[in-house]
Image (cartoon, rainbow, N blue to C red; front, side, top):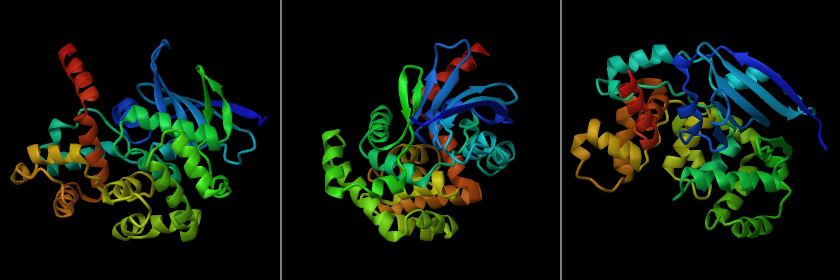
Length: 319
């Protein structure tokens, strides 16, 4: 059994620029949960081959990290800082969005960080997200990791696994993988995952991901939609969340309705989100919020989610 190391530390990311609840549980990643039986609220999950327990403090985030001792990357401060994009000045950008967008003040209640995720995990996760909800997606991803990833350890009543590497998945027979995923109730998503994994290998594997990071955003998105089961919305999610194209604005039905209500009322009578309308809405947000439009959109998205709106209203009542 692999030797697991544990390290504790903290990163300088204050509560006023990082709301961990909205950041980790708002639909960007599907491997985080909230620990409510602790004296202080904590968030636990797996990211970057590491099991984390994060505790938000007023001026920083303390962490507990567990990882395979054989893993060469053990600068946990750097890993977590990169994952939460701690170097990004969110306060400054939010002020710019407020000046450019008179509607933005309605949504800017809590500071959501844009996660910097692994592209492979991001792709598989959003292939699972089609016609699905967060709880079910999380269950599917955990099943996938338990079957093909490496065990990290047992924490808080559950066994944690790394997300499987592209190299490990490439050794699997495609037809067999499809059967196993269907048996695990992935449904039609099984064929998309199996075919996309083969296509990623054909395009160059991990080197292809690096090429996508270096490409202009539009070219990267066009490359991603070549993968099986991926349309523009999912491609935009991947560009935004794991390839560093922060101008990418994914438009789902939730954001579309928000745009109809607050930004583009002339679209209120248009029920179907056609490709033409999709581009119109995305370009409107890009022109309004600039080169970090995707981050601004994520704040809008989280602020309008029912579970977070309830929390915000409760805080306002207490004040």
